[in-house]
Image (cartoon, rainbow over all chains, first blue to last red; front, side, top):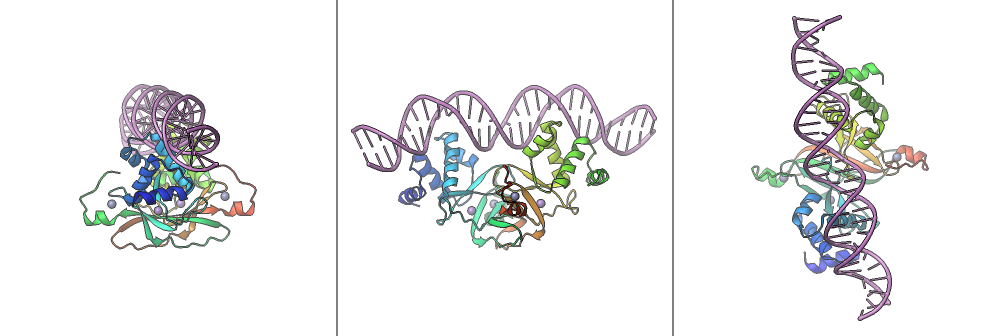
Length: 146
Length: 146
DNA sequence: TATTTTATGCAAATATGTTGCATCTATAGA
DNA sequence: TCTATAGATGCAACATATTTGCATAAAATA
Ligand SMILES: [Mn+2]
Ligand SMILES: [Mn+2]
Ligand SMILES: [Zn+2]
Ligand SMILES: [Zn+2]
């Protein structure tokens, strides 16, 4: 994605355009998988850890990214769809966590099936699948640590 | 649940019966919602933090409890069904996180819908719903911090 | 450009989770 | 019931994740 688009996404979400935010958002959009704080720290050593955390929090609050439920104990984030903004979050797509390569992918093509629970109000649904991803099934020997 | 049942559950899962394990298991079974390590630490100040963590790990390994994915980044655990034991884990039920009271419940009556992803191997599915729980819908003013 | 608002970096604090080791205890066997 | 032993506990220390306070720097606005 080109730099102009990155900047307009930041502006559309009421975020000041800074080097750190441009670089991180760029990386989110181009990476194709959900990111951990660890991966961001390793990728962006030029920025302070605290700044990266604050970037993730700002992005989450403004609807640029969303956190993905995981039982590993580490937070993971994925880029939101165009439809998300401050106040409006819709993440009805499935997530897949590969146990071989450790990557979490958003699967935009799969909608989370609706469930009806009498008495409950459901505002958000998250379906997280785990197993082996397409890439690891094709190249079974390329497994990598998380 | 009575003390005899608690003890027999521990024994059935190859766990030595200790005060800590009896108290924690009792609390899991009677509480009706998923527990965070934080809540356990606050509830069981008489036991060392490390012992509580090791209790959770032992329970999870032996199939007494299961961890529940959450986007908060903190581990949460729920009591397993009768059908779980060492080696056999089946958690195809839905989980619900209430945004009012912060509680996570297991919904044993709802199965996680199957999804087919060509190219992927799926070994586990987790569906986490969020919104307002039955209790909070009934008594809207009783909201509590997480 | 001047003003205002917000982001950043650094230090420090807090929180979460694990490991090593000495001691204690639940359990099985004599 | 007594004893031997594998396993559980508590404590200290460690490792890592995440947040907060504050001074400074930079972005937006006029
Ligand atoms: Mn996603
Ligand atoms: Mn459950
Ligand atoms: Zn993979
Ligand atoms: Zn509730």
